[in-house]
Length: 219
Ligand code: DX5
Ligand code: ZN
Image (cartoon, rainbow, N blue to C red; front, top):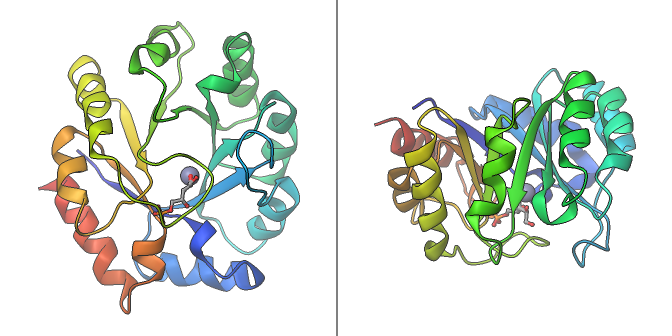
C-alpha cells in the first residue's frame, strides 16, 4: 500500500515552525502531522487554527491535523479557513455528532478522519467507516494522546489488523512511539500512514528514518 510518512511537528522547534516544516519536506515527508490539543481532552495545550493559518502561508504541504479536543465541531470552520488538509477528530469526543462533523469537515474541503484512544474498542469506529458519508482515515493511537516521546503499545496492533481485514483500501494511521524499532510491527499489521515525532526529529539524519519507515510500509 502507498505509504504516507507524517513527521509530528509537536517534536519540532515551534519557534521555527516554517523552517522545520520545510526541512521535513526536504527530508522526504509526505504529510506534516499537526497535533492540536485543548488542555481539556488531554492534559497538554499546543496550537490552534491561527498557527495553522500562519504555517499555511509558508507551505503548500498536506497538513494532517489531529484534534485532541473536547468540542471538535467548534474547530471545523476555523481550521478549514486556516488551510488544514485533513481534520481527524476523536471518536470519544464525538459520540452524538459525528455525522454532522463529517459533513461539515468535507463541506469545508478537508478530508475527514477519526481517531481512537488506546482504551477505546475498535468497533466504536465501524459505523463511521460504514456510513453513507464516511470518514476517509482511521487513526489508531499507539500511546495515550497528549505527549510525544512515549512508548509504542504493540497490543494496539489487534485494532489495526481488524481494520485492515475489514477495509482493505482504508487509510489507517498509527501515532505514538513509531520509529525504526517499531515500524515493522505496525506495517505488517496493516498501517500505511505513519506519524513519527521523536524518532524523526531526534535523528541525526531524518531523511534516513523517513525512507526506512516508507520502505517498511511499501515492501
Ligand atoms: C501524541 C501525539 C503524537 C506525538 C507523537 O498525543 O498525537 O502525534 O507527537 O510523537 P512520538 O512519535 O514521539 O511518539
Ligand atoms: Zn498526533
